[in-house]
Length: 227
Image (cartoon, rainbow, N blue to C red; front, top):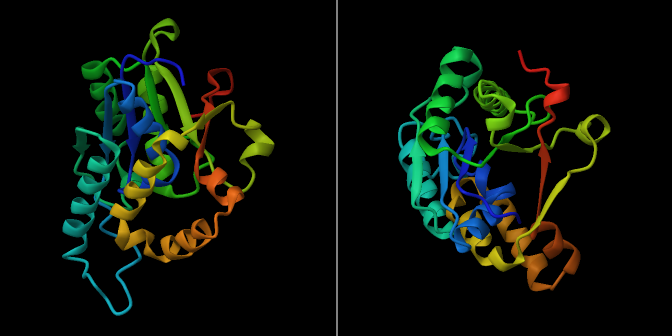
């Protein structure tokens, strides 16, 4: 991993960071790089309320806020920003206002690297709205002053259109942090953790390797299609 001055991570939901970038976040922190995570919502519309239910629509935001704080602690993250937007509504927010919010963070922090979702290749409407806002914000800066923009993509056809990931991080040294971050979001991850830990107990090298590699795409400004 390249040395960075400051990293800014922008995602819409608690647990978005845990799956794909928590190892990267922890790795930067372990090497002394400051990381700020701006989480736009509290995931209050999450589908998983348990069976039998462990939460209601009223109590879920408090649960997910506490989980997000626990995940931040697991990663070693001390600068967690909760931006106060409502889950499943980001696609209806004013595009310029969302971009303004991100741009203010960039002005404050002067990051050398920004991490978010790749617009067009991140499936969920909140993911897409967040990725577009980040692109719009970074694009306001002259090319020579822009931070690097590393994006997470996972749609069915993304590699056919944007190719293989060009940033691949081995986060094995931060594996325990990543696993604890996943466990912190237990209301949303319980369904997969039991099966994952069973396979890990069987010492599946393929599974472990899959979880210990995090993949990113450098945003292609020459093919920028975000309006």
